[in-house]
Amino acid sequence: MWTSRKAFLSLACTFALVATLSGGVASASLDGTSAARTARSADLSTRAGINSYLRSQGADPSRAVWQTGARNYAGPRCPGSGWTCTTVTDRPIVQRSSGGANVAECSAPCLVVQTGSVPRVNNSATCTRFRDNPAPTTSTLSQNCFISQSASGSGQNSATVNMTMKQKRGRTQHTTQHATVYQRSASGKNTATVTQLVGQDFRPASSSNIVQDQEAFLVATVDQASTASGDNSANVQQTLTQKAFATGTGPADVTQNQNATSPEPNAFADIDQCSGDTSLPANDTCTYDNSDLGNNDADLFQNVDQYENASTEGDPITQNIGSIDGGLDGHIDQQAHAVALANGDQKEVQQAVGKTHGAGPPNQTLIGPHFCCTDQFDDPGNQFNINQFSQQTTNNLNADITNIGQGNCESSGNCHIDQQTIINGMTTNNSCDDSSCHIGIECFTDGGIASRHQRPVVGSGGSGGGTFCNQTGGID
Image 1 (cartoon, rainbow, N blue to C red):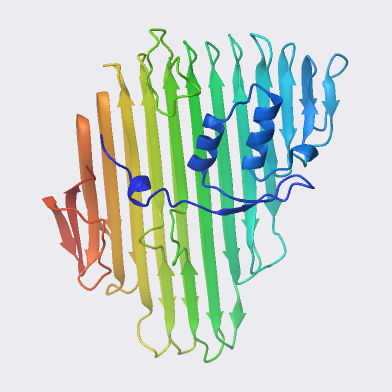
Image 2 (cartoon, rainbow, N blue to C red; image 1 turned 180 degrees about the vertical axis):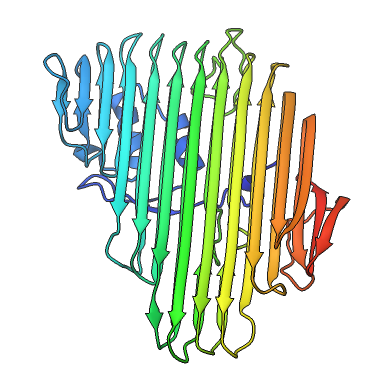
């Protein structure tokens, strides 16, 4: 089995999640996979087990909102008579249905636990976080959602997360978005949809030195499993757009940084799906030992678009986009006796334009790593498609450029990988159709940044403009 960059970064995608739930949740430092692993080992069938789980998430169980009616609702619009309702959603929400349904809708930082004490309980949770043009700050703005759902019998789980952050003011713009969905069922279906969008844009003009710094981390984890024939379906979309414009009206130095020092991937997604594992939830590894057939379906879309534009009357321009440990990182793992389908789509665009009047060309450094994606077993009809596109453009053809794209797939069926990298108009392609595909494209300038992720060359692409691209093997 192959190992994604997630492993050789030692699961380093850790962020300080300051979930400011009123009186309910303290600071927690958990990456998405760690949070899901905590839920996986928790006993959510008892009050004591749920309390222990809440404490593990930094929450105070005494401040949680508990609902134990037949049909429970938390949110702004009570469905009507016959429902136990609350409008309080800025604390941890625990719903244990004794009759048929749990529904939660929250727009504050969400921590939702839904379970049932009867064979068929349907769980539905929606977390919506939206901020448009917040006040400028040097602090990191965060948006967090955590949803845990457990259904027995034919009960179904449905989770929807929508996160939007638009920063339009301040020379320093830092954001984290963190979404985790944990779902367990028997013969019922698990459905998860996660949409994350971050936009950062600022356009200063000054006669003094200008420093712009934009950084964002989008983290999504979906962990789905059924003990019988329940299907799993997941859709994760992550979009990051960064635009930095600067005009030096006098003798001003201009420095622009976009994810230039990121120690972890800027778009990170992990989807794990298991169907037909009777040992759940006690077993941390999917064994899919049940002969019942449940399908796995996963779609992952990651899009990062970065643009820097600077002009000055004569002093230097420095433009940095990306870091060797940042970029895009996607992982999908599917285990079942039934057919599994998966699509991983990554798009990365970086562009730097710097114009000086007499101070020489701009200093430009672009680094674009992207990694994807899967293990998929054990039906022979399984299909996994990976599409990776990366484009880097500079107006200084002697810029330092590093681009590392790797596609990895192991399937009991078929893998199809298409890769394309364009560096200042030079195009390199790579592809693979097989049950085992490990391929990559690596591009670097002659004096560019050395990459510890480089692998031996197994073929060669084109070269030109001081940049060299090679087709390589992926991580094995």
